[in-house]
Length: 120
Image 1 (spheres, rainbow, N blue to C red):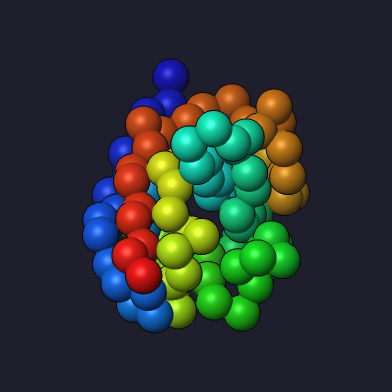
Image 2: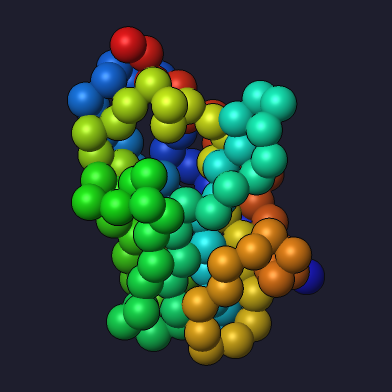
């Protein structure tokens, strides 16, 4: 059983930055999703095992950066120029495989979620 441990959420003003971290040991493709109250869980970004293939949702492209350090078994989501509409619980997810995966149903393991709140 893979355990994903997220950290780095918090409260920030619009225009600010946060960095989320997700620790997971093993050879996994990783994704970050977010879920706002009353809304579905949406894809934010994905990264393949080797870290050379990434994907961003249109709403975060150019503002967020996903990266991984496999020596530290950690995936990061650097979030810049944050907007109030980025407010949500952010989840990291993992699944075996070398590609990128875009739907929650494709992931086998999930973190507990970390709250990100952006004030206007």
